[in-house]
Amino acid sequence: MYIAKDVVADVLSPIVGDELRTYEHHGQLSVIVERDELIEVLIQLRDHPLTRFDQLLDVTAIDWLDRKPIRFEVVYFLYSIPHKHRLRVKVPVPERDARVPTATTVWESANWYERETYDMYGIRFEGHPDLRRFYMPEDYVHPETGEPLYPLRKDYPLMGIPGAAPLPEFPERELWLQRRKEYLEKYPPNPLDTSYTFPPEDKQ
Image 1 (cartoon, rainbow, N blue to C red):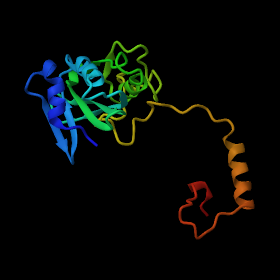
Image 2 (tube, helix red, strand yellow; image 1 turned 135 degrees about the horizontal axis):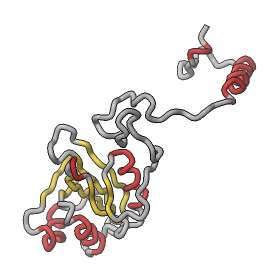
Image 3 (tube, rainbow, N blue to C red; image 1 turned 90 degrees about the vertical axis):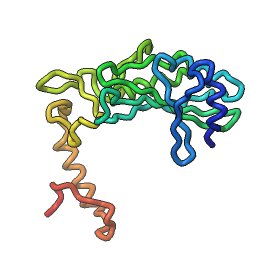
């Protein structure tokens, strides 16, 4: 269940004034705040008795590639265990200054969520205690330009960039293929099972 808009407006009015920006979609409420208000807003939503958003469920970003100069939004998914209601907080972020303050001082769980968002979108979280890549290696850069790559940005090629992440050596490959072949000879798959597909080397 999503919290009522008028309740959030009353709770946040001391910070954002009377013109709280909101967005509703299928009954799901989002509030939009500026990044210099973000931490104060999050603390107010966590501590106020009418909201009590004591749990940060996730942090992610949206890449609005065609929106200039505000290309990104950072999104915080909040949940209140006492009130059993939800809320999204969105922060517009410009492409040329892609940064927001860290929320780890409000919820410790923001640590890995922010690292993941940084790794995938390149948005920096200022004050984060250990901001480094989450999935990709630290040297994940374009092989020609040396620019950092962020796979969930919409201008990232769908099929990736050749040479950006070379695979490690696999000296056991031949042994692995031989054992796989022996296993399939001993336990052949059901030909009626269309969920099983043979890799190219197994096709006759």
